Image (cartoon, rainbow, N blue to C red):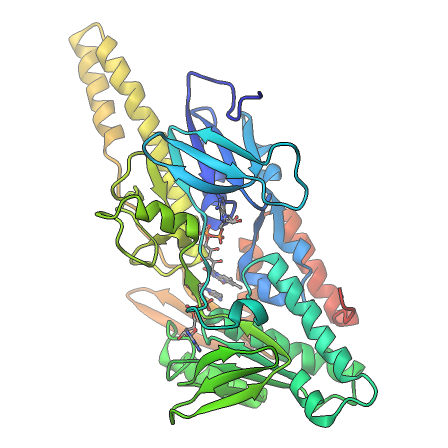
Length: 460
Ligand code: FAD
Ligand code: NAD
């Protein structure tokens, strides 16, 4: 049987779980001259999530936002093994993981195990439903490429079905009612993209339906975007009003049925709301793999939000497991910005761990007192690993009609800006953060195509 890890037995092996923001940032920076590296992820690509809402209406093609992991590993000086598989179990005592090929095509073997010296857990989180009945079955999440594809298909299906001859008026009204649950940045950006699509494209192609398409956003708290400054929240809410997006705050969804949701508003009364498309964006919850790992360490792992780690990203209660990004419970928000900085940081930690080992050996073998002192100094420096420090670059959110909002730290304070100029900033910030020159080219091409020909309305 082929060895699942790279062949160099003189080096320790790092197994990385996931190919999202955290793991990919780590992978880019880790030195494969120092370690054997194995990547395990059920998707063989990285996804640039900040522009994912744009793909739900075809402003950007989803292929423009992904980068195959092998495009990244091929630039590494030494071989990196990449397995498209899901890690289903972590045995932290034996230091072995179990992986399963959960894709549609399977060979004779769909399960395997991989030993590790160090495990880097960057499996992210999954969409939160709060166990509300019907969400999984009838709602659409917005987290992965396939979620965005599903939304796009369902949206066009609702519109074409509404245009079917003889459809009853109330059925047309239901089919054209697009409901978004969750007023965090995901829900807001999705509603904004949907608005633009209606205003800029659908009104031209379905003139008979214009005015009948309605967008509703439901938020449990008194206002949307709790993480943004008050003035930007107000600006977003007033922009949504201008865009005829109806905002229901202090409203909770109690149940989701096939064609209607049951909501409870501020008055406490329950009401049925018919819908055609339901997009569910109420944040994150822990993945089963992480919950199982936490259950193996009940004394140290008791934060439900995710894996507890220390300031060096070491999992509490386990040896040689590091965790980062949305899979962890830290003082930071679950954002790409945090995950990417943690990935880069952790690669530096591993360089220092390697240096520590090296100087320990050299110190042991040093012949003279002078050499010993020199090695001891080097060892001390390598052992001094600084804790993770997050540097916030600011928060951005697209709110529709070519307007964006930005909260950017400036000196000791903060600059809050909203409008069309901020949108130009939003665009340039995202373009410069895109993964590769190839992705930048593709996204700019998509934006240009949209400017000339509008969005594609074909159902996929
Ligand atoms: P992810 O990026 O989710 O990656 C997790 C990886 O683990 C994936 O590759 C997944 O396939 C893999 N995986 C899952 N299960 C397993 C398993 N069992 N075994 C192995 N691998 C597994 N943040 C910002 O800072 N700015 C933004 O503008 C922004 N916009 C966003 C827009 C949307 C629509 C969404 C959904 C999120 C946005 N975020 C943004 C948040 C950001 O995407 C997340 O915080 C970030 O993706 C977290 O990175 P991660 O690596 O921890 O997880
Ligand atoms: P979130 O947790 O930020 O927001 C979820 C919202 O849903 C909250 O406002 C919450 O009050 C509301 N909610 C919860 N339960 C509800 C219910 N039953 N009914 C109605 N409303 C309910 O989630 P998100 O928007 O998916 O964002 C997840 C993370 O990704 C955050 O850290 C966010 O900052 C980040 N993100 C950032 C951007 C950006 O910077 N532009 C875009 C998307 C996501």
